[in-house]
Image 1 (tube, rainbow, N blue to C red):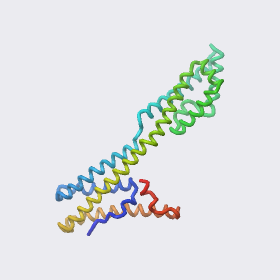
Image 2: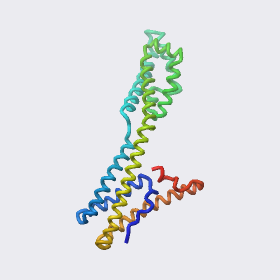
Image 3: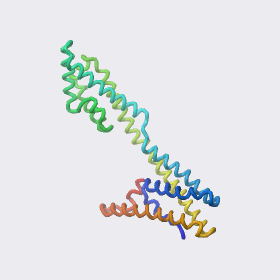
Image 4: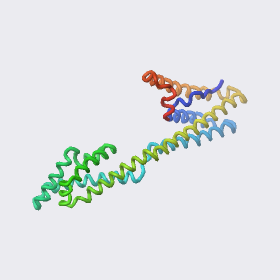
Length: 255
């Protein structure tokens, strides 16, 4: 009676995460009745798993303050600019300002209202604002904005759109690479701790007898078999879709 752990590299990081979580759920219940070797290996697995869990959370939630501030500022600016243009498009006290606002609203037409733009997906909003700002930088538009006193709003939107785009790219190029590396290393540490735990259980089966560990061994073998079976099915399907791509280049090397 032995627990086998070959093939764990086939699992994606999420499959590995769930396997380790399930194994800990079974093992931690038994700690009080098990020898010190078992307890030590379970505690080591818990520590490594928690680090892996934290890295995955960071991967999901990473969002620099500069990115958030720039997004809020550009959204406020474009909404405010559009709202003011709507107000001045019916401004009978100054025909020149009224005409300027109406002309500028025409520039917005292909892009939507300020609120429409602010509700777009981040990357889409960045692209839309970039194109809109280029139109607002044309000579006639610049004259109209100056007449209304709104040039500073456009400058603010442009600056914050640039900061957002640069911060987002930096996050992708630097922070995301760091976090991806952190996820990879903590997954490797957790996997090593999991193997050490399994090795300890296998050794204790020999020393103390199979009966004491029979249920746990069956539970762990079932878990491992289930996750590896899913991985084989997933990878087999991908291999059939792209027969020229070797199996080792599938999901497990990307996670």
